[in-house]
Image 1 (cartoon, rainbow, N blue to C red):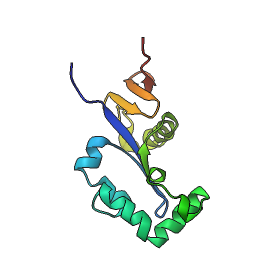
Image 2 (image 1 turned 30 degrees about the vertical axis):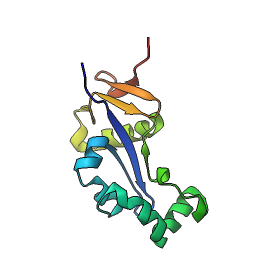
Image 3 (image 1 turned 60 degrees about the vertical axis):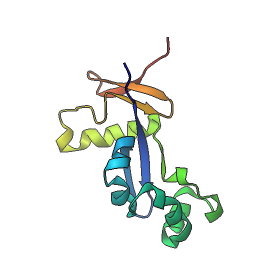
Length: 130
């Protein structure tokens, strides 16, 4: 059984107060980067961080840091289990998700490891190594 497990990413634009979650495939093939950050590709983000003063100011305020402390991981990183909990609350509140279906693939990768969707709990649970 040879398949790639989708990694889920956390994207945050403090300038527009927008937070999104996306899989690696969505980052590659959809316009999520453009929708969240207003740039064409993920490769434009370091340049945006470096030259967009308004964005830098918002990022510094949001994280309570200085401009020299800004990192790409503050706006784009692999999602954590805690991030996914916040996402779940938001996801289940949206009317179009009343059926509580799986929001991503049934098996995903987060910072803490690999998680599998549990239909009964409507949540991802960590797959423990045996």
